[in-house]
Amino acid sequence: MTSAIDAALEDLVAEFDLLGANPEDWEERYRYVIELGRELTPLTDAERSEANKVRGCASQVWLVTEPQPDGTVRFRGDSDAHIVRGLVAILLRLYSGAAPADILAFDASVAFNQLGLSGALSTQRSNGLASMVARIRRDAEVLQTARP
Image (cartoon, rainbow, N blue to C red):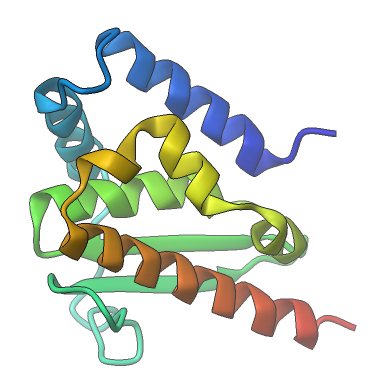
């Protein structure tokens, strides 16, 4: 069975593939990542709190985790940097609406390789992306443990 995360990844891979056959040429893909970030709904000033801040990112990144009645998790996020905001948007497309167990079973590094992000991001951005994924996984773990 395909999870919501796998389906979202397939969609993202198809979108990135439309941007050109050469994954080495990242100019168009960077523009697309930035565009994805522009589509995010901004967080409120109250949501841009220390509690929602993601540690380990050079840019400021905030993630809001909202458990849903059906057992899935909705994530919302924002960043003060354009490309990082786009990376947040990619993570939200992958993880938001998924069940905690699916989040924990998903290997984000495989997704980043399929999208070509692994080789295209600076070390600093890669570390920040890993910090965001770690935060999402930690929140999913807490929610999965808390469910009866």
